[in-house]
Length: 287
Image 1 (cartoon, rainbow, N blue to C red):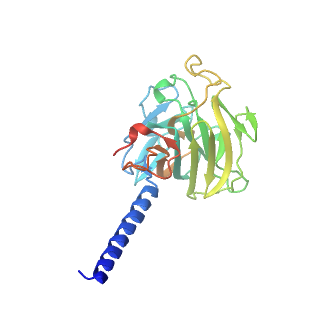
Image 2 (cartoon, rainbow, N blue to C red):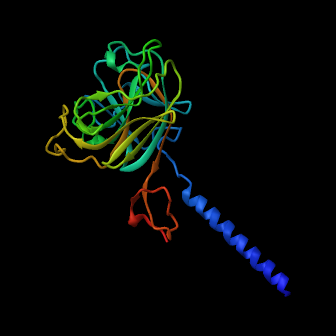
Image 3 (cartoon, helix red, strand yellow):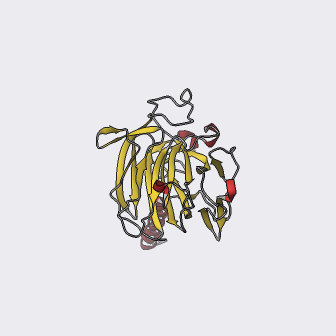
């Protein structure tokens, strides 16, 4: 082989190596979002309604219709405080969550005024198994999802704190709810809501790409009707938990609920290393 051919051959090998390296780098940086809702049924989800045993889907409130996960009140004559939550089976700690939601129809008769066009993502929630029979809401960080009434300003992406406290603007926040800085979304408009949850350190609420609220250090506190205070002790940091959506008397559609786990193998030599992980889990590494 001539010197020219030798040089051409090594240049070719170098290009191939560079291409494979770049391709591998892209794969390791590509976000691996996992759908929590499969678009077909409620596999992996369990309902819990106030006053009813775990797993009973009262009046078929939670359902899947035409690829949409719904909290529906079509089988109700009126509302009698049957607050419901639909829990996903997996627990998360460091993650991003993204959903697309919209408010639909009219609020069911006798639904509370504050629950008009109101749903939420319950983050770092206690398990549904640990809720008492008549407990209305789980211990959790509530990422409140709201719709407008057609006239007034009404932010979405708000924060409510059933059974917990957070640090907001450098101070421990003890009231139940606080508004975000989001716009108001009237009517049946689809809205994209995201959150970045980093254990018990920091949480961001993001609506339509804009960060509308940030807080830190969620801890158990403030009490909650029906919560076992011996199991869930005041002042305990909330480092992880389950994800749930709500049924609070107004119909809501979800067409996407997905999670990007930020906890995983951070060894660059592992096959399943991802450059976006922020929490190391050595036991997950594959070589």
